Length: 273
Image 1 (cartoon, rainbow, N blue to C red):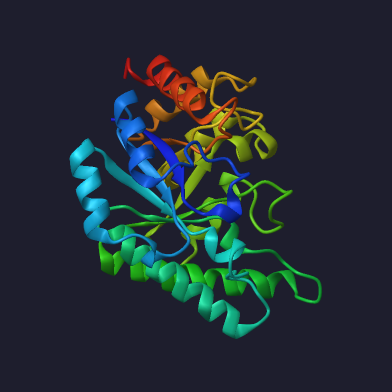
Image 2: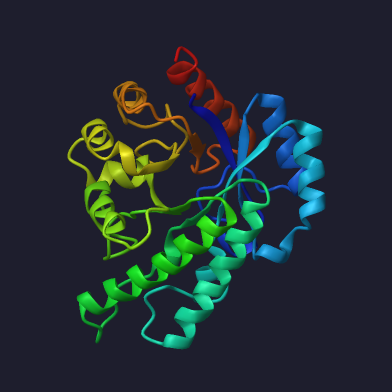
């Protein structure tokens, strides 16, 4: 069964990003529950930013699940990536993500690696950057497995990384790792830029997809752009996807309206599954 999810970000440094709710944690969770979402995707400054007991209590109080945790703060706040030429920085990136994995695993939620993958920077051979990325994902994938969760790797569009931009390239890369515990994030916004056909790409690489970001072509909530969502929803059902579609979208025109539009779109495309 495909489940609904909304993003809550608690990192001031990324407040201009595509996250629906920005209020304090309980306010965001309460609004998500009131609208009928199944879960939340959480972005925090670090694994230690929220006491697990507090989050457990809030999730139980509002009958919501934790779908995933983001790691982007590691890059935004600390400048850490898995492909930095500095070995010490790469080690710190792995430690930061490992801590996030352990935090999310307490709730059965995987960690997502997006911006922390980094880039091929000037002076570094492309093959070397990919070796560093593979090394990091392998270590982190095995750590996630030991914690009982998968690890989610996100291909980003060409304007955000020069590493992996499509589901096909991402699938080939993670399948070559010495761990089978790394899955892909199919982000509809990034795919709209990079894929020839979003539904066809989903069908071709469905076995590798572990999470979906639910946003329209302009990164506003689904229904406010030109993405052909009906065909994508059909493709997700055809691959028997049973995870979350999570609203990583701009809070346009405001968080409350964006959340309402998202759950309206979710019900339109997935409530007849």
